[in-house]
Image (cartoon, rainbow, N blue to C red; front, top):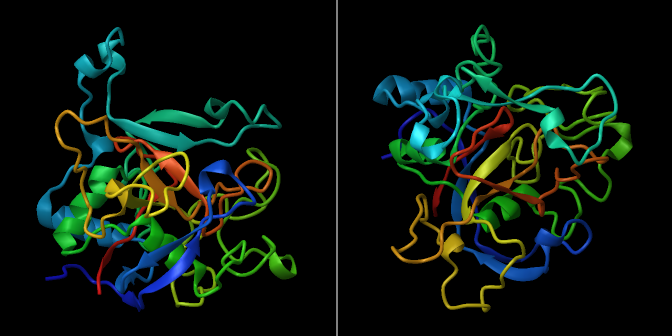
Length: 303
């Protein structure tokens, strides 16, 4: 049974060429990948949808939980308070190799308080929910009777039927001089001439499959474990991160530690002069226990 009000789009199964050789090394090699028929949320999960889940279950997200001092040896216990990572623009140009200049740990930041204490989602109910760790996304998906999409499913759906295009809409980032997704416009991380924040879902045109915000707005969790290069399906007998029904870690005791998960789709912070990842082939590793003001998700199901 599927819970929660939602609109899903069915995608026919296909074999497609996954990845890119043009941009970042972890998008290589380009290879053929099969996806079976699946359905995927037309839009990212919104604050309104996540609130329905929390109201029904009483779920507490990772960003809202107390930190265990045993996990942070030597840290001041008074500093170990719940919170999450919040983007903060700089006042001018900075070294783009120092990400800590525009990210801050904000005590009290979580999905209901996206910028920390004093902030609210009251006027943001149709925005994508953010500050979502992997466990939080899985919990919602299980409650809804769904799962997270795999990385190949997300990439195939994000292409919208435009096989081989660099971007979901063609070959250039800003066709006809305007953005087709909520991404950073201007010099990063201080001069944003675009939205500068999440936007209500559906603020930009749908892709060829009718899907909204598959590119930009927020990074989205997938079920795949991250590896620094793509592995072709024939590279090994079992690809742990490509099981269609994978929603939770499945590492057997004694195996190597679980890798980070793959995020897909880019976010409103993706910029050509820093992070040109608002493309279907782009990907990013993310620790399962980390949440931030630009990370959300959507759900999928078989068939």
